[in-house]
Figure 1 (spheres, rainbow, N blue to C red):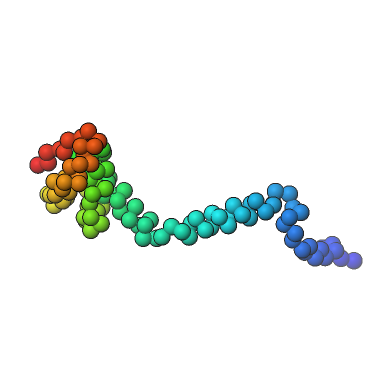
Figure 2 (cartoon, one colour; figure 1 turned 120 degrees about the vertical axis):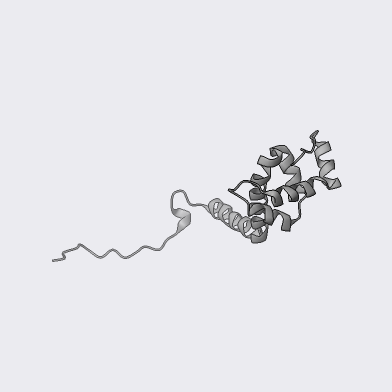
Length: 121
């Protein structure tokens, strides 16, 4: 007399015979893993810093001008600007933004977008 019933041994898993599993799923999963490993962590960090800096710049210049400022700022400038997230932009932040706005490449970006550089005080 068995209390728990007969012992059921695990069957070998043949995924190709199971419903919903086929080679396409494994190929898609493999390609997704490759795509994730292709992204370097430094690029991800740089994008996060740039987006954070843009949230600091936008209230000072406006969102359209902020995009040109972010595109033409040095990574070290973006890091300094990103530190001011969540607080009102101070004189150092405004000075950094003004310095980036005065660059010829930033001026060209603004001209292409039919924007004018704001006067920061």
